[in-house]
Image 1 (tube, rainbow, N blue to C red):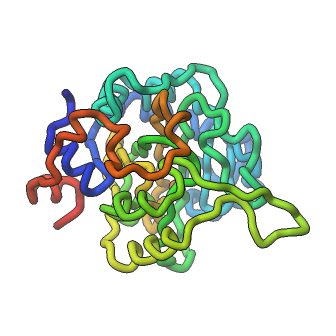
Image 2 (cartoon, protein in one colour; image 1 turned 30 degrees about the horizontal axis):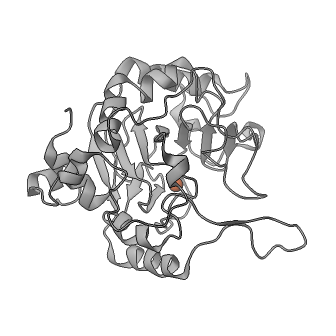
Length: 318
Ligand SMILES: [Fe+2]
């Protein structure tokens, strides 16, 4: 085992686990190179000139193709999600072993080098998000957030993801300071939200019609809407800032957001989902009495207690 029992315990209670220095440093640098090299020749934003990095993107630098999106403060390069480099980075031997310590030995769907990537079908519905589960055979991609610069401060607002997956990863490919746009999590929300879904991993959806615009995409239960509102009111959010190579692993029903970037540095991260081979047969089942039914024996056996030292290392307490 790479993970300790206490790390499994912490994850069970809080729905996330930060692991420092897990990504290969050389590959992190190469991933940053890949992002910058995806820009056209002439752009306002320039890698070597940090003063050009504050968002939003200049008019001439905008790109609305969701496989390499540059819009507002968001830069999301998805077309490289199955490049060998990305697979080596986020599906490394170590990370696959760790994911299996959570989800069970030999249970994971393997990524496919040069396979299909996220976003080739465009948005899930007009104006909606891109579906990370659709035709994606590797990582979600490299997600960057430009510094907010002069933009007014906004309150944090959490959500859960709408597509089926088991466990997800956000990895830092460059250092991210506090309030620098790192992934933010609402600890313990996975336990409160899991039972409010109709289905364990999936969600009912409603088709989009231009002449019937009131409903589109995902339908949430009233219990869910009530609970996530409460989560936002009563739970102290954790900012998973850190250094190049740090990752956070998180439960599929955990409330989270991509942080607002109030630093003067671009937030650079890689995202990927770990999916089990039995996700298809389990995705539409109702929430189970034991919410860890599809998880490893080690995780199931871990007691829901941990030390203050552990909580401190996970930024849960000061
Ligand atoms: Fe999300």
